[in-house]
Image 1 (cartoon, rainbow, N blue to C red):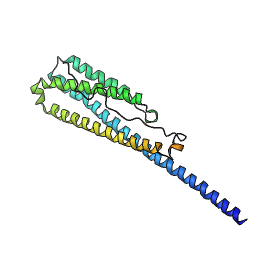
Image 2: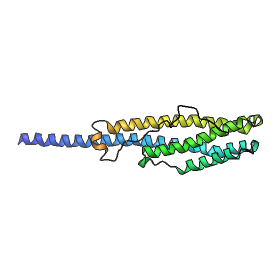
Image 3: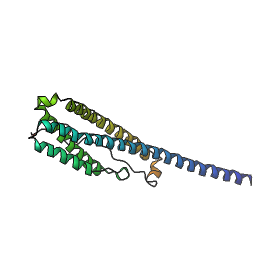
Length: 196
């Protein structure tokens, strides 16, 4: 009879230990996932800030460079295309991230062309509102880079958490799949050519 009590106590301890481990693992994976999705939201907000600054920047440049309509059209089209591509943290695939990056890359290319156009107009470069917008856009580019790095670091922590043993045993069953990172765009290693 005494032996049976110890066996029952042992079974109870093991069951509660497993339940505690499952709850703890779930909470760690949930926290890592929330950190990664928050980082993604911060990144999207930073990209949106850049997109919001573009019309004012383009309008300022346009006031000096009225005949550069093709460049302004490219800026508007790139901004419109980028606003159509949305990321959903619950359905984040490498293909969707790539499409998002390509749309944002089009904005970067259009912005680069707009900057090149502005270089031709010394009176524009002396304009205070242009100068302020240029500083804001440069700051945006730096914040985008930082936000991408923070997102990738958060995704790395999350992916390690869900793939680490023994978490991997329950991660898939609880809906914790590996998340995709942002990667450098194809051709990012060389400077873009500005055909203006």
